[in-house]
Image (cartoon, rainbow over all chains, first blue to last red; front, side):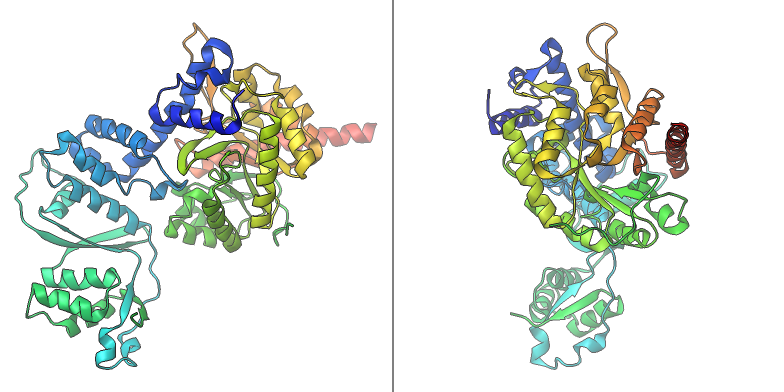
Length: 256
Length: 292
């Protein structure tokens, strides 16, 4: 008889491939054992497909249930979860979705799926107590430029060459039209949320550069430089004050 | 090794606390005896965890993990166990439990509770893993009998013998899922009453009840029962539950309803029925003892 490790390796291969045949000799129960093992195989596939459908309903709406189901079926076998928490499964799905040949006609699809992923993630975040602008008072002049700021966890920034936010608003509205013409133009988006609600806002390119750099952990000075590259008239001081006014800053750290 | 929860022991029938009911439970505090959670629903969901912490102020909580993978030959998922431990520290549950199964293989989570061969090798592995889990969590860890559709040819003992030996070797406690025993008995062809009679009664610390779904098999007329937790407790399970209460006494019981989740009130009705069945059994036992 195979050792436990070999037994589990063969069963795992069956689960991931969807083909039970190599594992059937391990089973007791005669002819019906293959069908019984298929219960586990079906559950693996169906439960993960359902988890993705719950996370990406807008993508399912956009793509149609059949194509979406076929794509999620392929995804759960190619990229199975690595953690037991289903809230963490699916971050790689937008990339996989965009790689499907049938997705070539929708160059905005990956960005749309990433947007939907972020909407889901910020919706389950919670706000932390924000800092007041006065927390910066001890850091005058040059010292300010080296600081990094930690923002509320329910915030994400993404840029797309397509107005994916308009498409998402159509999905979220009760009266989406049967057809909608997507015209290519860049959008810089900030997604915010907490405790079950979210917002999507467009930012001008300089503010986007500043805020996304801050959110990525870059120092205030580096974030300001990135913003000034986008717009020489950008006002870093005002942008910094707005972060505080919008209750987004939760910690200040001295830079490395 | 273990430190018990600072909370009182739980009594009566609790219900599974699932995400769709969190806001309602936190706000309305329905008359549930206690709640059980799957930590996997909370560990990556800060909003749900925040609500859970509010709920845990008013209710006793049992933590039932589906992701530690106690039976994995490659080792338990220690990273996940550490996250479960952190949650346990925050909510101080009354009970902590998991399954006699495996679900992780070489870093891949298979999202199912997969069958184990009941062998000496598996016993040794589970005994080591149980010690590690209980030492990490600082609490007893109850092991639940699985729902079975297929057996493994390598098994050298049956499930009651395996569980009894596991208890003898480790001193662990058991979570007796009565519905799983009924379902497995139907699917695998054993007597569920005899199964219950063979479990070490002193080790059983909790009972589970959950709905299952019959599914046609390829053979003409044959059915297999699928552990869906998607409906009421089957009528045939209630006498088996009464039998379990007669054998194990008054233990906390849980109603599991994880799919096609109805209003909480519907699940609470099932919990009330379980309380009634247990009360009738215990009352009759009391009369019997008094008459004897």
